[in-house]
Length: 435
Ligand code: NAD
Ligand code: UGA
Image (cartoon, rainbow, N blue to C red; front, side, top):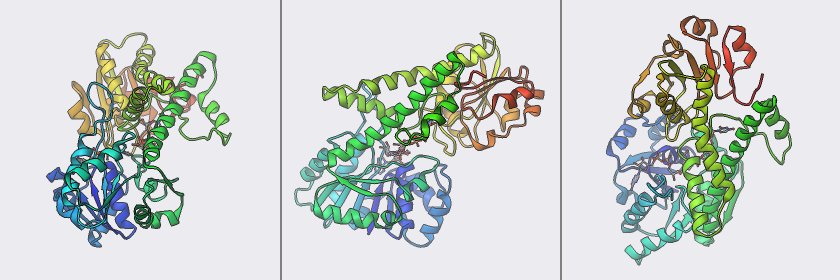
């Protein structure tokens, strides 16, 4: 199959590279020329484990190419995936579909022979209809189908998620498109996970429903964590205890500083807007959004309490800036809100992240960045673990204690057993653990 991926970002690049790795011929298109130039030279613009090696081997094998020339690529393709961003629209929280529709207009001009146009971007119900109308209007003679095929990969685990998905959802009822999409996914389908066909609108909604459900699950356990702190229970054991029940499942029950990232925050908001426009409000998700927004600033209050009620003039060291480990993505990262709130209360901030420092330098003001956890902890009155990178899992507590002004540890990911930190003289606060 000749596959074109429009948008060489977290989703487009990973999907394109993985399709190539399964033997398809793939061209990744992006309108940022420097990105394409870098990719041609084997430089990967994002941090995603395993991606660099896969780009290299598939480029060398001749199955993977990069270009800015969308029209030439589309004319060549059997299948064109749209994998551009759909961020929150400023002001109202709806998904901003500017990039999707711009891509559709560009595709329309170039279609040559039967082409399946696939929205892989997360898009509200009805977007496929609009993409189809845009192409039909711009090129009435084009022979094409528009299919929805949402992506469920997670950053940091993207290649594994893409290659071994729990399911592949394809929204179309056109027989020719079903045949093409079956061929596209045949190598993955043989691996694992059902290829689930449904109507296009249903497929579009499945994506939002999945993300909203996961966001709600995290928010539920975060509220249970707060209750645990009040009542003297342990949230990790509650999560384990309920997670054994297969109807509940043990995934996405890690209490923390609130979900962040490029998708849960924007997708929950967009679903709320879609539902309210359809006069079918989703109160559970409205509440999820509100609780999660409050939670990030509440984490700053936790730090302030641990520091004796004030952080004014105190240095606070922040470990981990990205929204989760194994990515350099800082979009809606809880650390950004927590740092701002601490600064608002007069703290000075030092910070370290294994992959997020370049991005953080551009986003954060008046933060002192250091080369490792020990350097940023020097003279600090608290160390706050915000993102659970592996390299923060075996900190040398003696070394930290020796360098800090006051040995407070606020572990927002429950990485450490409280006794371990306390054994080295730390005042330790976790999430949802009274002990
Ligand atoms: P991203 O911002 O990392 O990448 C989008 C890319 O598209 C950018 O490189 C941009 O330059 C390019 N682009 C925009 N318009 C273009 C055009 N007309 N022609 C060529 N290139 C163009 O975004 P992302 O994180 O990969 O997300 C893409 C979509 O996938 C979103 O809808 C998102 O919700 C969804 N999604 C993301 C993830 C994730 O983990 N990031 C997972 C599942 C679904
Ligand atoms: C999420 C979904 O998991 C993917 O299935 C989906 O494709 C993607 O959004 C998307 O649509 O973009 P991602 O945002 O990359 O993936 O990362 P997650 O692992 O889901 O984490 C999201 C946030 O929730 C992070 O801030 C993470 O720390 C937090 N989280 C996750 C918790 O606080 N507790 C958990 O138990 C799990």
